[in-house]
Length: 223
Image 1: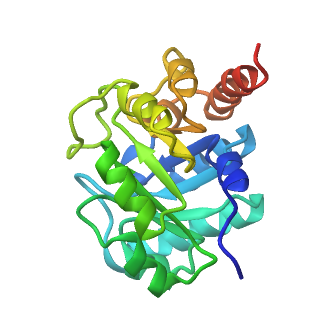
Image 2: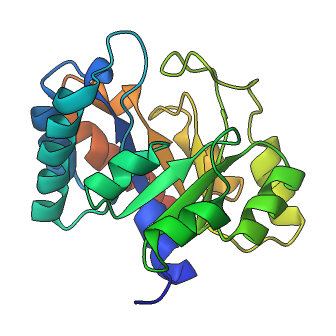
C-alpha cells in the first residue's frame, strides 16, 4: 500500500480529536462515540498525565477506542508509543521532537501508515518533512492546560511562517483551541484544528464538534 496523499491528509486533519482517559468528563468510550457522532475526522489516543493508565488496562482501552474509530471509519492514531501503535495495529502515530524520527517510525510501521510530527519552528518542520512525516502538528497556538509539557505559546506566527516559506505539507494547529478562537488558526494556514479539552470536557460533545465543523467549513467555503 502507498503513502496517504496530501489532499486526503488535509481532509482528515479538518477536525482532529485528541483524548485519553484523564481528559474525559464521561467515559472515554462515551466521549469518543459522541465526538464521532458530531463529525470528527481523525482521532489520536493520548494517554498521558496524572492518573494515566498503563499496562494491560491501557491496551484494553486502546482496543476499545480503536474499535469505535473503525466502526465510524475514522483513522485511529496513537501518540508517541510505537510499541502500542504496533500492538493495536493503529492507523498511524504522532511523534514529538523528543521521540523517534519519522524515518525510523516509517521503517517499523510501513509506508501506508500515517505519521504526524510536532514542529515548533521552520527548522523542525523541514527536518520532519525530510524524515517522511505525512503532516505536522503546529503549536501550542494558545495557552493550554491539557499538556503539562507544552512548549511556549506561539499564536499563529509559526503557521503563517511555514505557509510563507512555501511548505505544502498538511498542517494542523493545536493548543488551547476553542469555538471562540478556532477561526484565526484556519486563516493562518492550518488545514484543520486539533482539540482536546474543548471537546472532551464539553457538556454537549456532539454539538460542540458540529459547531467546530461549521466554523471550519464556512471558512473553507470562503464565507
